[in-house]
Image 1 (cartoon, helix red, strand yellow):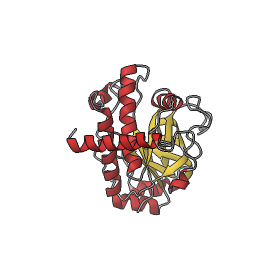
Image 2 (spheres, helix red, strand yellow):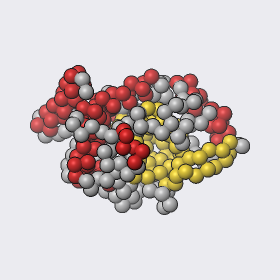
Image 3 (cartoon, helix red, strand yellow):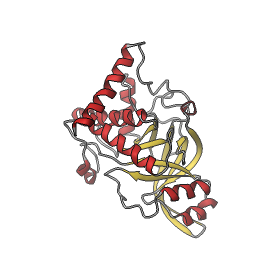
Image 4 (cartoon, helix red, strand yellow):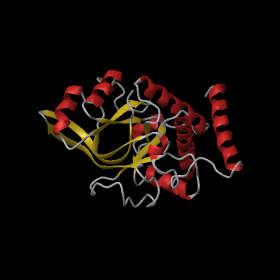
Length: 279
């Protein structure tokens, strides 16, 4: 990391620490952030999809007959499975908005050193400076989002694939990166969200919340398949945490559906959370 990045990370950390000393309050915890609309967010409640490649606008038009009204798009991050997006652009986002679709922007940055998927370990978080790396990638996420016309007060969802949070050293590194990423995204006027397996990253975030850690993601997108779709009742999240309107449940994955003659392989999501503000 260059010196400028380190200084930015240091100043952000110093600001958070000072806030905790002056007035006794630091960044809000997952229990007391309140309604995201108070932060300028736009909330969507309903069903949505995510898919590796952003679908064409013709496909989104055909899928207006589906029960889905939101689509997750992988707009950045070095660990994306589909880094070469054929359709995703500022014009595409404006077109999707015009068709009535809500957008969930997903950033697949560096991954946990103890990621369960071997192919993700090639994108590991640095053991030496995970906070600084999180700050740097959070800034990158905001730059990329802004270039696409995704405005301030929009959520940016950090995709952290399943990892072994019981490995203490790995958990420490991973949490430091996530907190740095969250602080950078929040500091720049966006809403930091987080996607992971309910039994891995999401469980880790809730344990950190219970330990009183601040600078945790503001919205929780948890993957638990083959259960009834619901943003409430997730056993690995405290009942009052990440509420109201701060949860997405990915309840099925790698399923193929066809609407209007257009076929897609998707993950299915139940949403009660912020969506992108497209400028």
